[in-house]
Length: 257
Length: 246
Image (cartoon, rainbow over all chains, first blue to last red; front, top):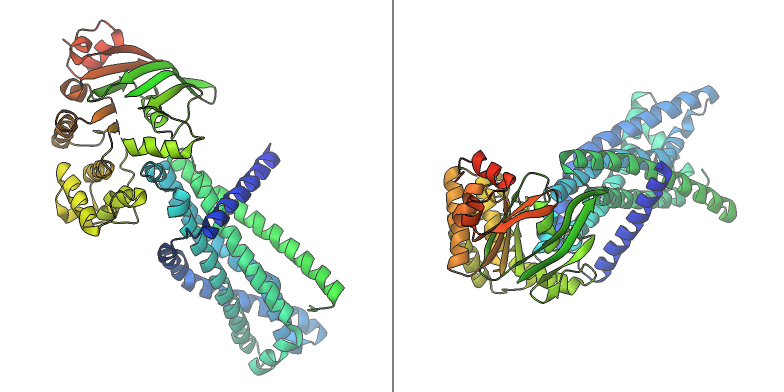
């Protein structure tokens, strides 16, 4: 049954994450390898993230401006656009992008290592693939994705400012309006989402690649499954965080909008 | 001694190995022959605990292969070096790092000088020059990658060497060189080898014993001379296929 299979995957991922957490607590992370991987998966994704961020910011400014015009409330464009981008659209869209770039790369690389017996060779040579191969990649993807999301979000704001000028909204007014609507809570929520989405991409892509089976077809299936699982988990996590944020707002009266 | 007793293994209700029993004593070079998919590679992976049997036991020396005892499994893997069918080199590190990986992971040598000396010694043993040491595996030909893979396995100096189709993808000259290497390891260094292969020519030239698998079981177990004169159909087919029929 597909639902059982999905639950089994989630259970497997939780145990996999737990193993990685234990190894990290035992100080078995090889940080020089983490740095290598950050370069491989993170630095090389920077250009794409910046380009995507600019366009996401511009799209949000354009769409919200269209709605606000009907009410003659263009003055709120900066705040509303930035708030929506920071709290929801920005992290989700950039996480989707990174799940395609970083997630697919990682799961394909690990999947190939598994089906070509590279991981078995490591086992036979007396090392743990989890410690030597997986753990550095998990941390590299978590750190890279988190930093890329933060950079991406800052660029989306910048993209919004630039496009506001294009559609005739004064950029100074746009910027001045941002703190009226964007609260500290918006930023905190955005950072929390960025970290969690980064962790999801890291765990899912490493887990799927590590458990690939059956030659090149198996690697293809692992990458496909990685992409689908990442999207589903990111959407579900976004929904749960948005719900939690809404409840917190009601209870503590913090972070309106 | 490696002792395999009533080993059974199935995948998805398909029986691959059924009641396989045999022993390999020190200094032997046993060739395991059989058609594709008969379970030769599965048998090797069972010996080093990468695949676990459904029933039956495997012991290496006095140690039983048991996934529940990781420390003992690690000892078995230290004593048994497996050369995979495909090179299985780590793509992200150099040839040098690949060969010394096991030495470092097992902490067998700590001095950089000793490690470098061991790496060069094994590289020479497989007929490669030191030029390849700083190259990445992807820069090498398949045959060279395979030799590096053998050097990596030899670097930890295992008592037992398991080869999974070692000559696949290698040219005749490289094949002859590898056969000579296996023979030298057996005769000069007393290494015990189990070689899974389709290559009857290598089996007859290098092996001290041949085991033939068919339909999950052993249909022949004897010396190369006995194999040549065997009346078993598959044994004859193997020899005819390679023009070696007696």
